[in-house]
Length: 512
Image (cartoon, rainbow, N blue to C red; front, side):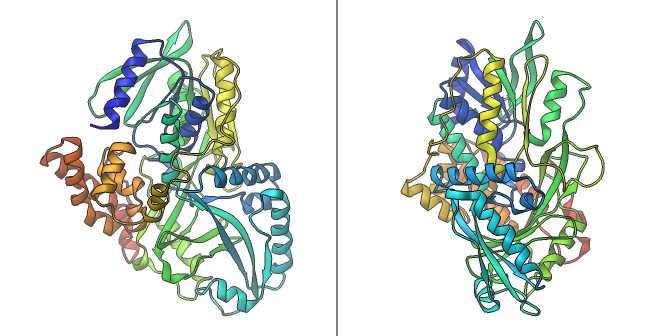
């Protein structure tokens, strides 16, 4: 069974011994960052994820490592400065997952040029020595050259600036592998079902292997709740009835063919009707267009785009692209839930802070939530600092500032990034199963490779071959293959958009 057998053997050894210094619940960006940070300090560390790593919000981002020009407009200079600093750290530590990307803001009103120029000049200033290149004003012809698919009617020019782009699920797997390199024990498909307590203090967790149903009590000196948008569930498991921290916000992205905006530069719409910016970003061999900011009350594992969100993105893109994509052009649509902190429980979530929060309960549960992908490392440092004090662990500083992530600098890792959009071959599937924790067809086609997010129909066509290859590697039978294919097809239906509003039926959450 490959790596999972070894991980379960290590888990049983830990249970039979002294347990762990740190147990982390949640295998998204924040939890995986905490695992790397805790292990870098020499703390014995276990991470438990109920589904797959980055199954939730962390695989559904806008694929940007950025300071956030929107947060600059909101006056949140501290968040922008911190994110720009972390952007530089990620470019240095994960060059196989993160790369610089130039953005162009087309302008159709003369008064926009000086305002945008001043704002993006200040963005450069905040980046300081971590700047990726100075912003500059572009004339009409230079803007059309940079953005060949831009709407030319009424175009005055543009402003170009630099940020960075990444593969979010790919970086999550690199973090999981880095944590294991450092001695941590990352386990997906291991659901936490309870918190163990001794005299009112948390002393571990109760977990169940989703594949076998086997139950484990896992002792730990401190427990970190890094479950993102689902953080209130674990907080209320600790203390029933506790007031929630999270205001969920949904962000939707559409994926279309690259010929709607050829070239290597991204397009930024600086102001939309819902108060956000909108990006049109080249990603592998497609374009990602998004995002939205829609308050949501429910917390489905597979959130689905609302019809109004799809219409909003297409209508906004149509105002800036010479050839506007329609519903029939959408290859995939995906939605994610942001774990925003605060607010009064009503109204728009667009103005809520993207900063993070660390909370410690009376029983010692450490909750880290909020934030964004770019600042995951700073979030992890803050959470582990607090957890170490809560668990009376030796005082040790984080060692992640210069910690290269697994695969950085390796030729095979660069190849993998270049081909993560492609269809997985037998060697790629073997790597995903034996070294990258993949257990299902979805794991391979959604996150080890990004086929589902790039072209849902193509992903469905590949599912049977992937299932058969995985079955051979995992010792599974034909019934497992059939079940995996059926489950994946049901999931992928929600990533497809029909050519008219009747697509609503296809956008309902698939059975999980």
